[in-house]
Image (cartoon, rainbow over all chains, first blue to last red; front, side, top):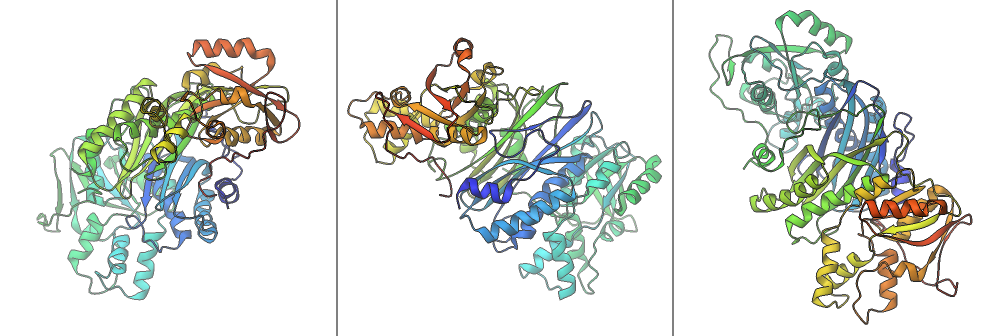
Length: 318
Length: 318
C-alpha cells in the first residue's frame, strides 16, 4: 500500500464544514464573521506518551483527545484538525484500528479531518486542531483575579495511578486498574464544559502536566497566587481502593498529569452560573481553593496548616 | 534547561498579527472579513527528510520552507505557523541554530510562530502553517483544462543531484555540488509567485515528490492528461556540469523531488499575464507542455516521439 492509497483509505472523509479537505496542497477553512479561530498542536511519541504496544484504537482516541482538551480550555467549539503521522511501516491492521478510534472521537465532536502528512519513521503522531469562538470570548490563562474560586472538572489523578500500576510501581485491584486505565487511555476532553464557561470563568487551562503545574501557568500569567484545600482536592481522586497511601493519593491528584480535565477560576458571584454550566454540560466540578493576591501556591490541610511536600509538575526536559 | 525555558528562550516572539501567540492552551487567529484560511502540515523525520548531521540552521529553514511552499501552491499569503518538535535532548547549541534558521525565514515571509509543542523523542519536526487569500481565489489542483499551458517556476532537479552526490551515487565538481546542495538544503518557497498567479493560473501544486508525481496530482484531480516537451523540461536543470548523462538529467528533473518549485497551468490567453506575474515576483518560469483531454502523461522529444523511460515519483511507503 502506497502513501496516497493509505491516505485515501484511512484518512479521507467528507468535510461539509471545511471549504476544502484532504487532497490539495492546503486545506481551506472560512470563519463566520465575528469568530476567532483557536489553534493548538500536540505531538505524541511512542514510549514517552504511550506504551509501544498500546491498542491503536485507544491511541487514535487519545491523540485527538489531548488536542481537543486544549480547545476545551479556551472554550472553543471544535471545527477541524490535521494529522501528521510517522510510521515504521504501513501496517493496515494498525491503521484501521488507529483511524477508527481517531475518527470516532472526531465525529463525536464534529471535528473534521482536513489534511495531514504521512511519512516513514519512528512512530510519532502530531495533530493540530482548530476551533472557534466569538471574538474576545476565549478563556485565557491570564484572567484570574484575587478572590476568585478555583475549580476542577471531573476527577484527577487516576491516569497516574494507572501508569504507576502498569509500570509496576503500585498494586491496584483489577477493577480499580480497569477504571483507572480507561482514564489514562481514553480521556474525555471537556468540550461542552469549556463552551458553557464562556463569560463565566475568568481563566482556564487543561490539566495535562498535573494540577499544580497547569494551575501554576494560570497563576504566573495572571500575576497571582493560590491556596488549595487539601481535602477538597484529594476528593477529586476517583479511585477508592482501600489502603492507598495518602501520599500516593495526594501526589496523583496534585501532580499526576494526563488528566485532561479543566482547572478554572471564577468570581464567587458566579457560583450559581458555574453550577449551571456544570449541569448543562453534564460535567461535575469541584471547588478546591481560591486565588490570592500573594504569589505562590499553598496547599492547606483542614486545620489550615500547609502541606510540606513539594509536588512537581511534569516537564519533558527536566 | 526545562521545557518551558526552552520554549521561552528559543520559540517565543511577538505576534502582532495573531490575537494570541505562544503561551496559552491555544493560539488565536482572526481572519479579515471575506478571507479564507489555507492550512498545511508537514512532518520531517531525521534520516528520511534530512541527514542526521545536517546544519541545524539550514534544517530550521527547510522545515518551514516546505510548509510555506504549500501555501505558495495555493496562492496564499503566509500568516502564522505552529511548531511541534521531538528532540533526543535539549541541546542549546542545536536549538539556537535551528531556531535562527527557522525564524529568519519566518521573518522574511511575515509568518508568525504562534504555538507549538516540545517533547523528548527521536528527532521529528512537525510544522502546521496558516495563510490566507480572498474567498474563492485559492489555486487548486483541480482546475486544469485541456489546452492549458503547463509551467514550472525556477529550476528543477538540482536538489536530487545534490542528494545523489552526497550519498556517493554521482560525482559533482565542488562548485556544482555547492550550488546543488543549496537547492537541497535551502529551498525558496515561491510565495510571491503563488500570490501573483491568483486569477491567472487554472491549477497549481508545489513540487516536493517530483514533477511527474506532483503534476500527476493535478491531472488526476482535474480529470485531464498532459504532454511535456522533453527539451523544455530538461532545460529547467540549473546544473551545467559537462558529462552528466542525459538520463540522469532527465530523471532529476522529472522525478527528483525536493524542488519546492511550483508547477501550474494557465490558458494560452494568459501567457502575457503569466509573464507579468513572473516578472513582478522576480521568479523565472518555463513553459514545458500542455494539458490534454486524453488521460495520461506523455513526454515527447523534439521529433514528437515519446520517451520510453518511466520516471516514478517519490512515495514514502512504496
